[in-house]
Image (cartoon, rainbow, N blue to C red; front, side, top):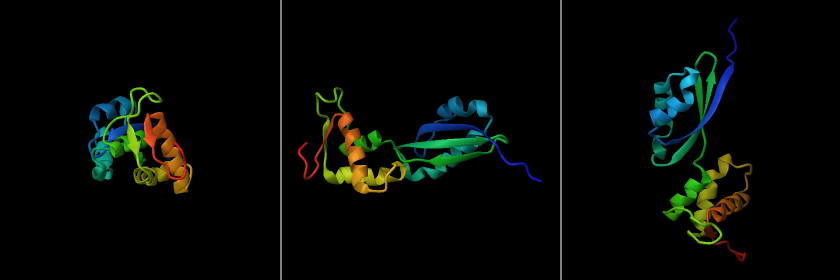
Length: 146
């Protein structure tokens, strides 16, 4: 009778898509005994189409040193910075770093939708708008004064 695998470690890493740094993998996964080269190959293969983005991954390691990768969507702040073509404000609430149009807001919300706790794009847009405002980015919402 085969023994069931038992999860020993679960680590969330924020790595560059298609090009995971071995140093980051070694720091976070070294004590687990998992084969770091295989983790890097699996991650790079799975995120090859997302080069340049920060793609979080949850690495689950079992007691037999096997592993499983679960990819997430890039952080909302990264997607907003990409849409703006710049960074957020150094003083949110005092200085505006840029403006997100409704179309840009919708594009970020649709991309982020799988990791949010909603299936409604309108609600996802409000979540993303809140993150943008906390970064000092103005959001152009139709039918609202803001």
